[in-house]
Image 1 (cartoon, rainbow, N blue to C red):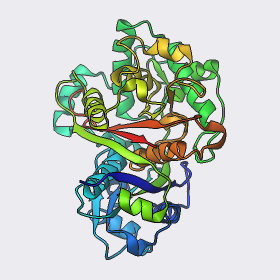
Image 2: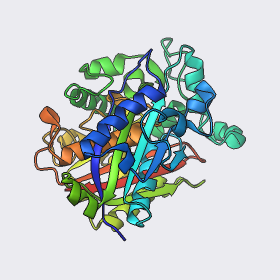
Image 3: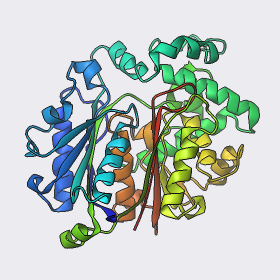
Image 4: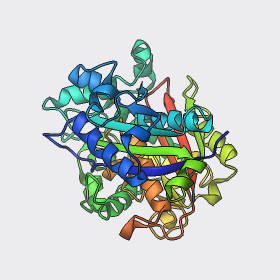
Length: 402
């Protein structure tokens, strides 16, 4: 079995782009990733193209990768289309890594691309809401009050993702069993916006205060708008290859130590995040204390705090204490979301997972400028998506190292 390395990684800026398309975003990311690896399209043996929402928003189904990549020189190369909710791009990466690791191919390209903004916002939110088990949605509605209004002031947005109702229910349960306070969730948003201010690829580069976060409109109590990731567009691409090929290319060494994909179960305990992390740590031969820098799936601010616990950075109920210690901000022992995370870098759902990995590959190569984590040697990405019962439908945890 071949050792797998990242030879090239690149992404577009994440944001809301009126004139961009999935094709133009994909072309930009792919061209930059190939250039970073020092290869041409003809050198790629297989492509795994991730997109989640184009079918619902544009009607383009079945051959999205071939359509998006038709001008990149990659037609003729095997292209597999990947869709796995918000874990789409990380799943594409997982498949690319598996293909190289098993020596089926020597060089593989993982792409994640999304154009989620639409003139009709209702269609964007409808696309997000499709990532649940629609046949079981009535059951979900009985356990998670998706129209919860009890604490919502009059400034509640008319449109929001059903996932924020789910996150809100999870958050209320977490508040009841821990010493976390809503202010802690606001501090997560403040931290990630501070990090994003240093990231030219981030969607939201404005710093915010705790007061601004707590005072922004309530989406689903206790979540406010600035505690929730924004809708956006973007693309990211990663070239993976065997260690032998990476050496020939002269690529900076970024090893893929583990890439664990699990599906959710109807029981939320243990959740897919916990199980994926356990598999990844075992594959990589590392533990939580070894991780220098992380990109976590903070679709809502409490998800980052709870993620500290699920990934073993601290004990159960201790996420708020870890945040307050400063360990997860730049300069801390385990820097979380130096890119700005989903909250501030943005969350174009089909691109998010590869975007996380681009950030971590750049961190391990010392390319992140003012947000660089000094001496970063081991990195972890966690990307989850969809909903089965009360668990994420798919979760990917990846461990990289120098």
